[in-house]
Every structure is written in structure tokens, then in C-alpha cells.
Amino acid sequence: AHKAELEALGITGVTTDTLAAIQQAIAATSDDGTGVDDLGELQTLATNAAAAAATALTSISAAAQANDAASTSLAQSVYEDAGVTGVVSASILADINTLLDTANIDGAVTDTTGEVQALVDGYIAIQTAADGTADNNASDPTQADYAAIGVTGVDDAEEEALLGDVIDAANGADVNTQGEVQALADAVQSVMDAAGGSADKPTKAELEALGITGVTTDTL
Image (cartoon, rainbow, N blue to C red; front, side, top):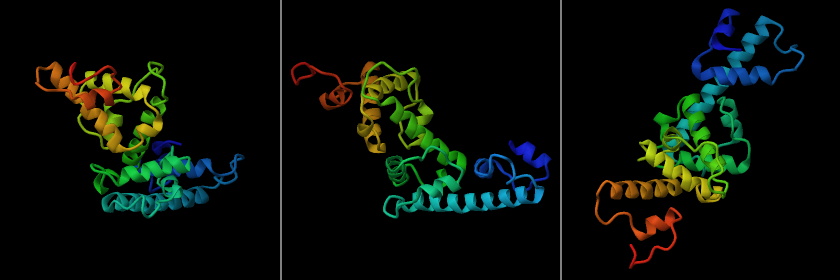
């Protein structure tokens, strides 16, 4: 059900932020519709889901602000209550909690379902691309995906394309933190700076990080 549809039925308390949680709560009821065949019970379900979402988002944004999501082991159920999808395993949960604790991810950018969903989607896009096999992805992570996990500097199509190729050839475990992806983004930026005429860029270490072989001190 869409927001307008729920409102047309007379359901109150539906907002852009709570809609996903309410939709998930409806989906979790009996398939035969008996859990939502009364307007009163549908309103109660929506009210309870919205309240749970608000509480969950407060927990997520507070953890991001305090950088303690990992140390306090923010639970998978918190993301579910917030209406966020995609946090479906212990490893994904651990990585998302670690992202909440990193630079550029604070309470202000994690206090809506849409913002947290974008972070999870960005992480998943990068992990899906990083399958260890080069040139086999139909699409690469976008500038928005990188920005959503707090990575800075990926701000044009050329940088997105080169970083996408590097991510594509990488293994997921090598790009599952903000720091790892940021280091690659910085190396890509150095290559672009060099193409623009900057001297002494990129470094040997940066080229090697991008997977370039045959670089020696003599050939640099």
C-alpha cells in the first residue's frame, strides 16, 4: 500500500519515513488478509509500526553520532523496525554498524529511513560489484553509492568508471569498510590529477592499490 492509499482508507500517522515500516508490518501479517481486514486493527498496526520505526531511527542516529554502533552491537531487528531492508546477515550487520561509526556518518545523516536505506544500498552495491572477477558487472556502484557510505571525492563520471573497474576486480572483504574504499577513491583521484597535469602523481603505492602491475621506482 502506498502512502496515498493508506490515507485514502483513513489511516493516520503515515509519513515518508514511516511508510516502509508500515508496509513491512502489513506484509508480515497473515497471507489471507485476516490481520488487516478491520480498519481499527490496520490503524493499530500502522501506529505501532510507526512508533517502532521512530524509536529504531533514534537508536540508529544516536549510535552513529556516538560512534558506538559496533561496540553496542546494534541489532538487526533495529534496522527492521526502522523499515530498512537488506541487513539480512550477521556479516552485513557488522559491516553496517562499523560504517555508522566512521567519518562522515553521523546522527544528522542517519535519522530517516531513506538515509539509512541509502547507506545499506550503497554498501550492498559495492559488495555485489566486488566479486573478484574483472569486467563482469552490468553496472558499477554510483557516485551516490560511494557518498552514502561516507566516501568522498568520487564526483565525476570518469572517477566513477575507474573506481568501478577497481571495485569489480576486488573481493568483497577488501572493500567492506569506508577506509578501504576511500583509499581506492583517493588513488583514483591521484590518477585523474596526474591526467590533468599534476606532478608526482600517482604514487607507486596508489597504482598498486588500483591493481596496476609492473610499477617500479625506475618506471614510475
